[in-house]
Figure (cartoon, one colour):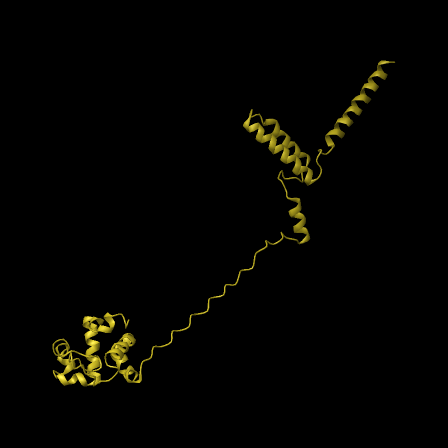
Amino acid sequence: MTPNHLLGLLRAVIIIGGLVVLTFLALPARAHTQEEMNQWLMQWSDRMEHAFVTDGDFGHLIAELYDMENRHPWWNGEFIDIEEIARSDSGESEPPLHVEPAKQVTAPAPEPEPEPVTYGKGVEQWRDLVTAYFGGKTDVALCIMEIESGGDPTAHNTRTGASGLFQFMPSTWSSMVPDSITGGNMDSVWTPETNIAGAAWLQGAEGWGQWSPWKRGECH
């Protein structure tokens, strides 16, 4: 074989070898789909983490990442949730969380109002007048009147001298109840409104302790 034949053969080998190399370089990377790229990236991340905690030699890993990005121009080097993209393309969304419906709470029925306390006709005839002087304390006042006089403005205890609707002792009527109420007159104890007004004043000044029914716990 002449030198020219050898030179021609060598040139052919070089050309063929070059074509093989170019073909190899032009081949795409092993991963072609986004799912495969995701898998490669997860493995690459594990290797990078291992390199950080061991020898710190991660230069070749950076080179691998650049190489993958260069071979896949469409890839941005990030992990992409393929299922999320598929749901977005199809208009689907994450299934809604199951929320238990709020339980309806039924408010307890209001307790019935207590029946108003009523007394005998002799006492009830003075309710409006007693309310005018005692206000919210009317029921206690009527209870005391019921026991003391039964609503009789002329009631009189011959043993003690207590007189009127609230059975005032003469000394109490003359010395404790002011003249602005009694008029300085002992006989005014028999006047229903004056007796009631005197009782309201005395209760406000001294409390209910002036009357035995309250002290005995019969009227509270």
